[in-house]
Image 1: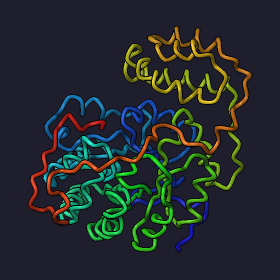
Image 2: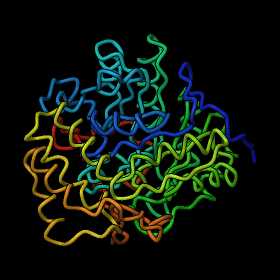
Image 3: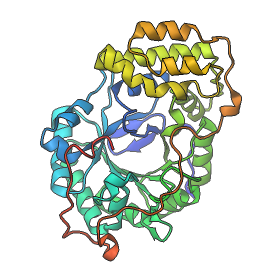
Length: 381
């Protein structure tokens, strides 16, 4: 197993990420405001919400609205969804030429049925030939701008249809700068436990950097993943929901410093206010406050706060209302240590079956497919 010192930077082609931590794109979460909030806490690479290649190429309004960056976002990173090599190549060129993007990640891991039923996301790596063509198109388009292309995938469709080792080989052969592996299958979605052994197996199988994803709830988990699997870096998703200071802990941990961020409720309320403020700056106050509502439960998880107050916070329509309600919380309440190391965000049960296009499993090439890619339906999915 290749080992890595805790202070090692992550190298993705021409891009160097001093702290080897990547914020996973999450639909409806990792907008410009949230990326700015997390970046204010620590170092890393912060990836925009997933957008569709066809939506970008055809100028879809929803896609354009998602492709927004904070004024202080010095490294622009975007995750792209696509099932057609031509659209993906054109989309990558647009991102590099027109939007100053410094890193493009391709999504081959989304388990959402509306994505997999079209052969996209986590379903696509089953078609090895199509996967190779998409990666080749993306890497070729980005090469003119010296922009690295990476890909994210899962172990496979289910335990009987694993694809991650072939995906790693194809990523390496087509010139991808790295591959991120979520240690779950599409069938598992977000349930159960991530398979870190599979991540370590992929590290052994390829020469390009491997990033590990799954069950990183605390900074110590990230260091343990590096030690156990030999990954070049980690991808953090649900663990930072309601806890943007996790990136402060991660930066400290990889620098070899002490990690002790246990904010009391007063500190959490200030973080909540900052989050709502940034959302309002980017979206306008009314929409920004509505976007903030979904985060309330995550921020207050484990803290003492009455049901009526929680309900009122989840219905805020202005920063003034937010200020009044936050003042009612017990700011001296200590951090609920029982929440440390526990799952956050969606979990659910494994899928009864993976929804796939008819005949999807019949062959593993897929180059002759004409997979329909909707411009708007999948964006943010």
